[in-house]
Image 1 (cartoon, rainbow, N blue to C red):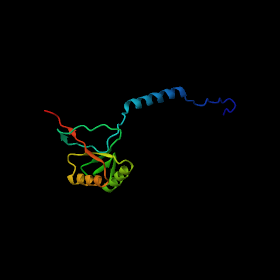
Image 2: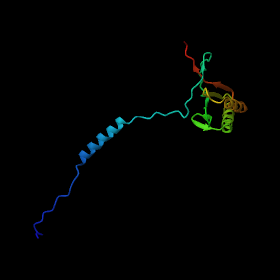
Image 3: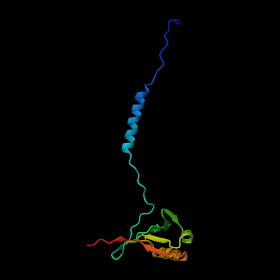
Image 4: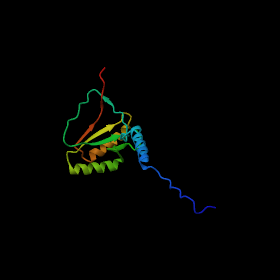
Length: 141
């Protein structure tokens, strides 16, 4: 046994510069290969076609957009699903703040007609100034 002549071993070391280079390459690889996710609308609508529809007038006030889908929940205010009662109270509040409140309705072609009538009734009960329905422009043959 040799106790006196034993050499101390050098502690293992990691070269940090090489490690940073490898991490940077991995980061760049991940940034290039991932795709940026676009915000998807909460509701995809297939608007009805119209030959007689006219483009709306541009004003400073932004209209409130109500979407009507094909299945429950039928009504969306912006991107948020709402009930008819909640929609009517929101519209009443909006009309109280601005009597010239405009509402644009985007209803799917296959949306139940009864739900659209419920929406119109709620908007009329809230005394909304203007109700407009959005359509797609029909392609000319």
